Image 1: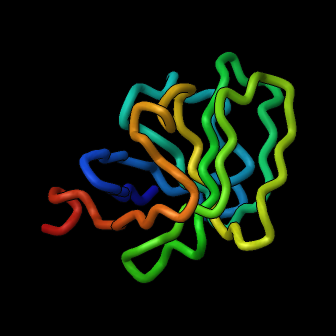
Image 2 (image 1 turned 90 degrees about the horizontal axis):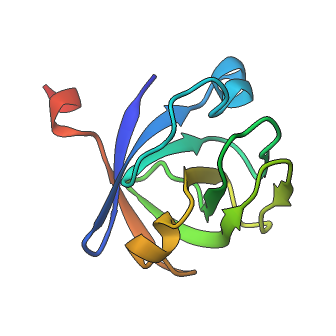
Image 3 (image 1 turned 60 degrees about the horizontal axis):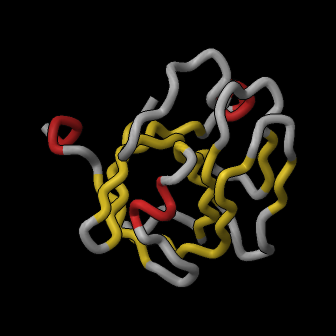
Length: 123
């Protein structure tokens, strides 16, 4: 799977990309717990569930994240296990983060995230 770096201001998040039927369906199930600064970018996606999850998540809706930039279109903080969330109509991709990451990163609606490949992936 691909890895991307998303940056807004001084906040940086390294996200694994789930963009196939299998990787989107699996999501974070059976994966190690996300640490601060880590995430899973699900694309395309405009709704998520937290069924079978062991920890709460922060969810960030993004406009189409293909041209090196994406706008934050929707935020859901501290979504507990066994919940469903539907994003705004403008949301095309969803970034799943550990609970508390939205506040730590100071993400807000309308923020623009720069999207890059990690340095080791560019070689």
